[in-house]
Image (cartoon, rainbow, N blue to C red; front, side, top):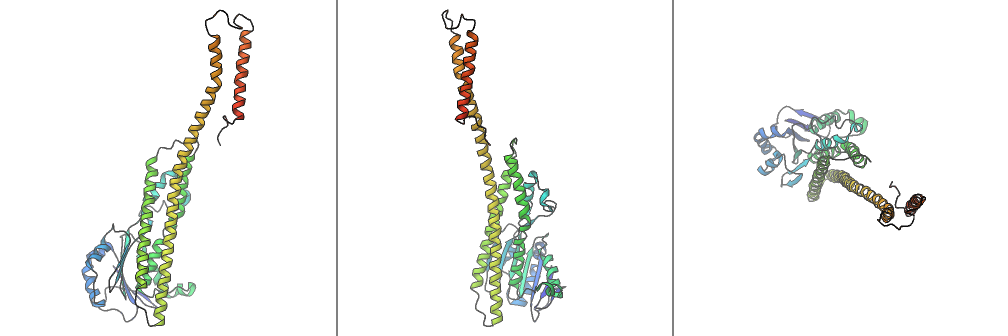
Length: 366
């Protein structure tokens, strides 16, 4: 468990939970899920001293639940949000290191390695509690980044500032988790492109339908995650609009900045959801086009066989006619009969071929 004091001008890491809240700024307590479960009693006592209230048991269960979808809830003294991240799982960094490494076989691995573990947030007026998966890099990333801003180095070069409130810090973390999907977007597009090329390769005998099914199921899962994220952030925005008005102009400005940042997070989620749906539609379209191409190829084969049957049918009629067991047949007793008949059959066959080509029955499909 890591404890930080965030104020307007400094960012300090504390070694233990303080007895009382600092005079200015707020506290950020970030812990892994197991650490939170072990130290929840101590944290509840500290919250009682700091805010006069504790976390509800149901919300504690939500923060510890690894299967809970993205959701938002609130009480009169704090808000709680569970937000599922979209990031490369542990041990899968090689799959996402370079998009040019993608192969058809790695498409399913890349989709399956996307980690959607939930991150929990409990937002008080002057306290933020975050509950992360064990291997989550969000807490350490923001600790390092805010430490650099607090030292003034980054603020002088980019104009960055420390989050003004626990809600502001929560929205920055959520936005970072949403944007982390953009790092995976190009690779997923590349690998599904390989899958489409395999489906449409002329001499391909595609048989790994299980891989394609797993890829489609993974995209369905990503779509569900994004829709849950959008619902949670929309509920947060609705709750933010119901907060009482601030009499102080500076506080009203901070409230408006929170609304702007919340709408920006929602817009990023919409962008990710649109891309996931586009990938899903591309995979569905590739399957449909593959079967259409196979049906077209089968139709061309049947057309060719039908034309060949039509060409040889009159020839079989001629040979059957002259094969009848009668003494008096034209050209049977003539020395030139075989040549006349063969020439007529050849001419008839060539004529039918020319006729069918003009009718475009023998054209090769592109």
